[in-house]
Image 1: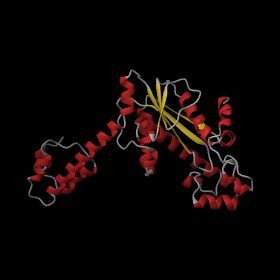
Image 2: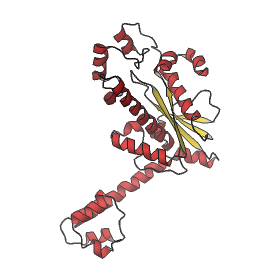
Image 3: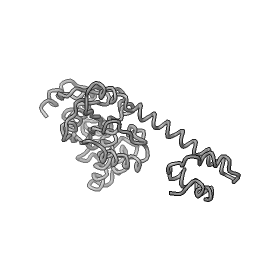
Length: 285
């Protein structure tokens, strides 16, 4: 490891590449030395490093706040807390996928957030792989298109969540769920409105669910060419609606959704997403 004196013999671009671009640990005294350095750009580099520190502190505080629900449960004696979330409620095609994950205690992963807030696909995939590697256990649950059309999308989403929890090889003591409660689940649970932005466990589950569903839709695109499922993932984009109108519906289109039924010349159904009569159907799954 280079000493402070050796580092200061390097050029400002070299120091910037090491400590700003690559975010290597900052040696004690480096910033103060740069602020006293007469070279052009040294003061600016010191300012960039201090800004990096400020952002790291802010990110650390954000990640700590993201654990507040988990910390409260740990302090109550719940040792194993799972987060559960789903992806794919709005698309016109493809399954709905849920993720369930139990994170290590006090887990902090830089950039962890609700999957919808992470627009860079590569970053989302990278986070998913890291979460899977670090998690105590994780699982996905899927409700297929025929189940969506039978139960309705709301109850199919709950079914996928229940399957994700049941797929965990180690069952949790408590479950945190985004906005809802999972029926026919004996484990204590809490639904948190906008939980994917407020709970680390739910955010991690949302990333697993989203990346899993995206991979499924990309695979289906190769099986059912012409609809560009790999790009829009089945969501009702103008391109998808145009393809649906011109080419008709595929076997993975949700025939209970109004736009799909319109393309097929069928009367709309499931205008009410929360039909209570589907409860009994869910119970039988």
